[in-house]
Image (cartoon, rainbow, N blue to C red; front, side, top):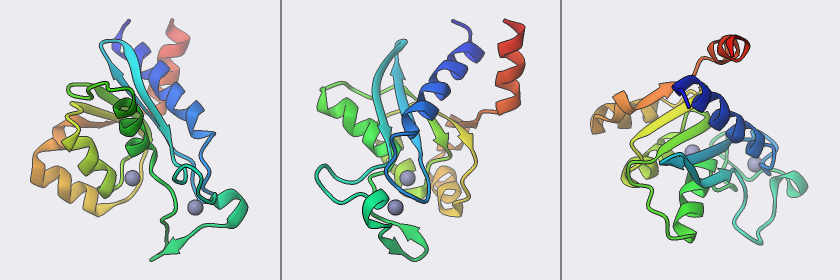
Length: 152
Ligand SMILES: [Zn+2]
Ligand SMILES: [Zn+2]
């Protein structure tokens, strides 16, 4: 499978799974892939059994909803629950990870992150620069994926 096709498929899975997100403000999705296999998926949602933003409204702190476990962390947890190592895996996200998620991603050993939509968080950039992880995070250009879809 070529690189563009891989991006198209896994970003597509991340977008699809984001539909399950339970926050009113934003729905995000993440997929972890290792050796061509999906080893973890996640969307932003409450802790199991807790209230959901969709029914109870968002739990706001400093302009952000803090109720949900973010998609990226849920995907890592998802792999951990089945005992699968995330070391050297790739992550595909609907959005640029926030500064909290990026720390989890770095420490989980994930080697590369691809994301579709930008999400402004200057603290993410700071972490990326400090850790040297900045060259391991790439934005996927949506139009480029479509170009290649038609070329197939
Ligand atoms: Zn919310
Ligand atoms: Zn996050």
